[in-house]
Structure formats: C-alpha cells, structure tokens
Length: 130
Image 1 (tube, rainbow, N blue to C red):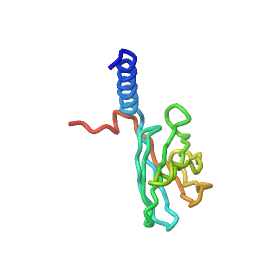
Image 2 (cartoon, one colour; image 1 turned 90 degrees about the horizontal axis):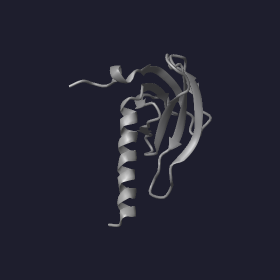
Image 3 (spheres, rainbow, N blue to C red; image 1 turned 135 degrees about the horizontal axis):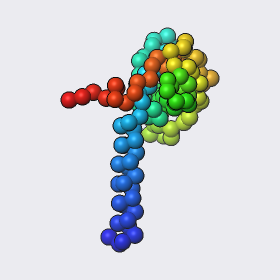
C-alpha cells in the first residue's frame, strides 16, 4: 500500500470516528408521524440522524430532524426522504418546520405525512446507562 493510499484510509477512519462520536452527544428528537392511512408511528433519531419507517406497500421513508435553535430546542426542521431501492437512489421529498410540543404539521410531499416533534431530550438523558 502506498503512503498516499495509507493516509487516505487513515483519514477515512478518523472522519468516521468523529462522525460517530458527534452523534453520540447529539440531542435525541422524538417524533410522531401520522401516515397517509391515519396510523401514527413514534420515532426517535439523534439530531441530524435518520429514523425510518416502511408503509404497508413496502415503500420506506426516512425522517431527519435538524434542530434550528439552542435549548430548549423548540424549532426543528424534519426532512422527509424516500429511501433507496435497487433501482432508485435516496430522494429528498421535502422539509417540514415544526415546533416542539405543537400539533402535527402536514408535509407538502407525496404521500403526505403529519409530523410532530413531541420532545427533544439532552444526550445524557436519552443515553441508557449500563
């Protein structure tokens, strides 16, 4: 392995460790997602992480919360993705701005999801201890 290839591999490993470490300390966003059929699913994801669900027809969707303010973390933008398949890449369908603890906001996506952020937990509270 050449020196350049070794350095590239080392940088990739360092970047991966930094990204995983950063998510360990991210606040946890609890979301309530109302599906097109009226069912409601409760999902959680670290800030800027991804939570996924699959509809009855097998289509998978992802929800990525991004906190827009400092504590008490009341402004959150949730990006809605259609997850990849064997023939199609991940597709951003849209974004929804929601207030923590407020009523659900319908997405301007197809299909339509009603999205609410029920709470945002600090990392220390959300991380289980052994």
